[in-house]
Length: 90
Image (cartoon, rainbow, N blue to C red; front, side):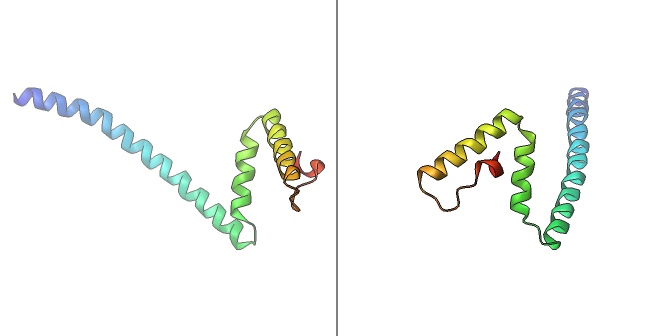
């Protein structure tokens, strides 16, 4: 039974340890990202807007254009005073 436990333990360890290393590798870039956002905030930039920009830039151009158009249409439909101009939104 000891051999079976040792083999199972080795197999489990061979799975867990690489995952732990990956998690450590993920943590470093996340900390770097937080530092960059903190610097941006310190320079007076709005972090929420920057994050939205990153989200939009990851989309393909057609989806971005569609989103901007829908936002404009919906805001205009409500006669919202803050409806962006299409030239600015697109």
